[in-house]
Amino acid sequence: MNLNAFIRLFHRWMSIVFTLTVIATFIALAQPTPIVWVSYLPLLPLALLAVTGLYLFGLPYVTRWRRGRATGGV
Image (cartoon, rainbow, N blue to C red; front, side):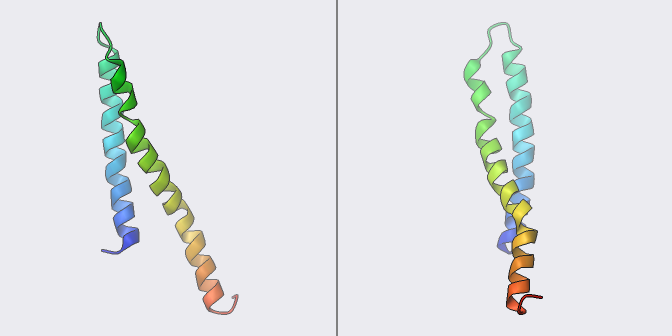
């Protein structure tokens, strides 16, 4: 498995983890005595999603730029 496929798979699993942590946060904050520290749980998966998402977003542009540069600017 190459790096791009691994990052894509990691990004998919992080989206599932992020969704579950957001659901857990809603449940925890809906309690009669809300557990406030749970609201910080989605931040780590969100940061990882942002980094991997930016990488995946820029990947086609970088590969196109490298391909054009290697063939002499075509």
